[in-house]
Length: 141
Image (cartoon, rainbow, N blue to C red; front, side, top):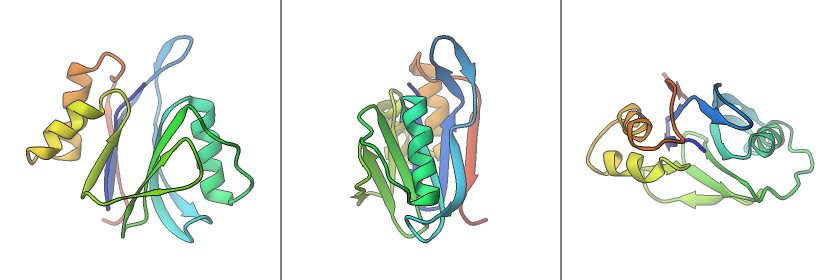
């Protein structure tokens, strides 16, 4: 799967994707969302096709099928939202959140004061389904 971590202003992820083969690709994005009506940062974990469909929905607010094999994290700069297989957001009350197979490792680092990048690097070291480089985007510089 992957590791994606987020706070209100930054999102960070590994670049490993495992499908029929393993390769590297960018999994976190910054764009204007019609759903939220502002610029957001977002990332998905799980099925790649469903992740793309979800990200397209955030941009366009077109019809969205149920996503049973995709989790997503989104921040609008004010709040963090978790989407767990549907288009209905769950507000995250914590200052950060992680999804993917490396999430437990990443959260342990964040709980002990580490940065988002530190958290993803730890997940890459411990989780065989996370790997590649660490990619990070900030909503506001």
